[in-house]
Structures are given as C-alpha cells and as structure tokens.
Amino acid sequence: MKKIKENRTSTIVLHNILIGVLAFIWLVPIIWLLCTSFSTYDGMNTSTFFPEQWSISHYVRLFQPDSVAQFPRWFLNTFVIACANCVISTLFILMVAYATSVMRFPMRKPLMNMAVILNLFPGMLAMIAVYFTLKTFNLTNNYLGLILVYSASSGLGYLIAKGFFDTVPRALCESARIDGCSEARIFFQMILPLSRPIVVYTVISSFLVPWMDFVYAKMILNAGISSQYTVAVGLYRMLDKSLINTYFTQFCAGGVLVSIPISALFVIMQKFYVEGVTGGAVKG
Image (cartoon, rainbow, N blue to C red; front, side):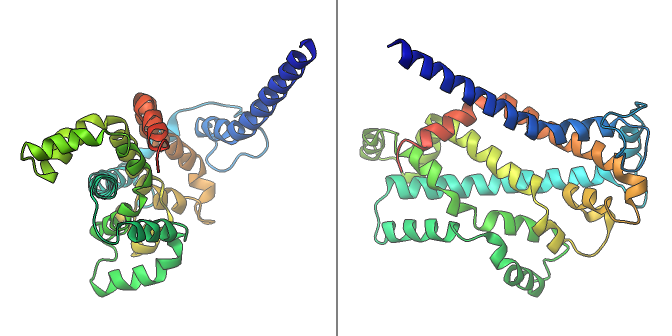
C-alpha cells in the first residue's frame, strides 16, 4: 500500500513539473511582448530580455493616429464586426442545435453527419471561391462581406450546443406543446433561460472568431486603406520591413491592448464558459 502511494505521489509530482515547464515555455513570449511594449526603443530589441529603460510612450502614441498606425479606428472596426458576428452566429448556432436536438424531421441524422464531416475540412480551402463570390457581389473591402464570411457557416458548429440541449428534459417541451406553445416560444422563453452556460460559451466563441482572425480579413480588406483595417491586419502592417524599426514597440503595445477585452470577458464569464463546455460534452 505504501509503495502504491509513493508511486502515485511521484506521478503527481512529475505531472506538475511537466505542466510547470510547459506553462513557462508558453508564458515566456507573452512576458517578453509585455516588457517590450514598455521599452523606450522603437524597433526590435534583441540584446536584452527586459528593457534597459521603461516608458509608456508607445501606448500614448497608439492613440495618436498617423498615416500608418490608426489603432483606435482598427479597434472600433474589429469591435463592430465582432459584435455583429457574435449576434448572428449565436442565433444560428443555437437555433440549429435546438432543431437537431429537440425536433425530429426527415434527413435529420444525414444532415448532422454531413455538418460534422464538413467541419473536418479547414475553412481556408474555400478562400478563393469565397473571395470571387464576394467580388461578384461587390462585397470585398466591405465589412458586410467580412461579417457574412464569419457568420454564414457558423451553424455548422452546433455540436456542443446540441449536447447541452440534449440534457434539457424533453417533458418540459412536451408540456409546453400541449399548452399550445409554438416552437419559437418554447425556444426563446423556455429553453434559452435554462441554457445560460451554453449561450455564454457560444457568445464568447463567436466574438473570438473575428477578433483573432487575420487571413480572411487580409484577403477581403485588400484595398490598402489603413483606416479600413481590422486590428490583426493593422498590427501586421506594422511589421513590414520598411516600418518595423519604427513601429515594432507600438505593435507590442497594440498586442497587449487587444488582449485585454478578451481576457476580461473570459475571466468574468469563466464559470459559464466551463459549464457550457462540460454540459455540452455530456451527450452528443
């Protein structure tokens, strides 16, 4: 018995050491980015890990737009796109999840299987087709086109929400139908209030997609007008070889500021986020 306990203790210690090493490796670039953002040096400092002199001047300069860096406008553009996508995608995902979980209709299972199979393929495979489709309808260099790209296929990510809706008692829905409730009323007035964790999880996930995306934003907003960029495209522009020696530390400061809203949102909603993930994993 003593030997078993010793083996278990050794295993736990090794696991904790491994987690600590991985956490250190993961945190080093983030700490370096944070420290560099407070440096007085404009370009990339590769001589020392911590700056020799500290300053907040680059954070101040971020909010003084010039012809290259227009961070406040980029932030606003990204926030508007993220909010619009958040609302549309959340509605799509929750409605598809409710339909596949509660309702029974012909071709239900084949459609579910097809959605899962389609999710196995990277969205980047359709980039060229998406671009020329948007160009045909004059939706390139247009925020509406970007929102359509982000939200159009969002319903395919219904699986976790469906797993959560599977845990809602079916008797509740049947009682509501007997009382004459429509499916829309059952969904909005009964199911959603009981599904706050999965709603929060879906909202956060939908908000993160445009907030962190670079590829589609770069492809669609390709006119080269700085004021139209999203945060990801704008910050990447600062790393151009002709600009990096002037704007690299501002790039680091922008990266820190961009992470703050998402980090705060995740910390505040963490309880519901975890409940949504674990609840949606109970049934598939």
